[in-house]
Length: 138
Length: 351
Image (cartoon, rainbow over all chains, first blue to last red; front, side, top):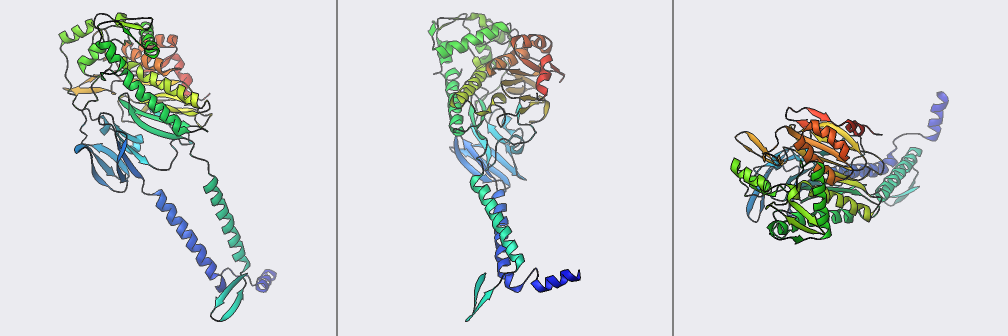
């Protein structure tokens, strides 16, 4: 132990020296920037609403509340964005089948009679490398 | 070595050993993440959702060639088949045949689909019937997606009249010429979605024999190829009375097709009674004894027709008939009780 301490003293081993401060500041700056951008890109998934094959609306999942979806001045439905999930409500289609389920449950919401497709736009693989369920029939 | 200017005085600063180690670690990490960023493999699967044949079509493809191009080609084919075989589009081939009082010469593809539908009707003893157009129109299930659709229940006499103008025996096909006797009307809705899936699978394989993925048309599924090239796709069977996503069984497929017919797909409620689109070709009313049938078959077209036929025939008969025709099935009756063909269990395991 005494030998080690003397070696430390000889080689001037210290974790923080005043002259290293600039270097550590730069490194910390890089790390904080990287973490910030990492979070910024992972957050804020965008919801895209396509009507008749054309993108008509884009919302952030963080914009909670009710959004009205219209086409040619006609109200088609409302979207309810709540806690990062979306449901169709007040749809003007005859059977309201599109009001069943949420975007989180099905990955995509579709109203066939009104030709509306609602999906989340994100840079993510559509097929996950897991043992879970890949798709549903029925 | 790091040179730093401190006012007028030039001072040479020596970094400590720890700092050099830290710099080294930082450079290695930077290199590692740069390599990850620039050389990361492209996403394995590309997907697109569209609307065709009155339902949602999702195509998921992985290919060393251009998966986006394959998906577009498949979706174009779905739209083409939709236009050609639609019963509501007056320009469609089916509308032309239904309107004509004379024999109609049809193209090779139309002749093939009609011929196959007659063969499947014979094989299922009319439980699947492509000539129920009058009955389906009477109930309005061909217009159920129209915004202006108003559900009504036809009278017994109207149903009787439509039944008299129904039945696949009235379709004659010879040398690509179709004759509809007894004023029957074609409605290939029970087979054309399966046909479109089969065509989509062929297109994917023509464009890239190594392509993998699947086509999901309104939850009727055709497999392009195994997941990630070698694994099984885990496919859940929807619980007919559960919420969307709740399932009653799980099967594993690397190829072939799986199709489900359910009384919850196209229906309307009136006075608390559910009226759905799978009609009994003998009575003209929606089937009440079955609520869901799922069929696995090598071809989606056959699976599509078989699932309708099994729905009409009921679990007892279907459990015997289906394996003879080359399918395996799961049937859920009105009491929500599930029964299976003997070979169904094969698909419940990864082999």
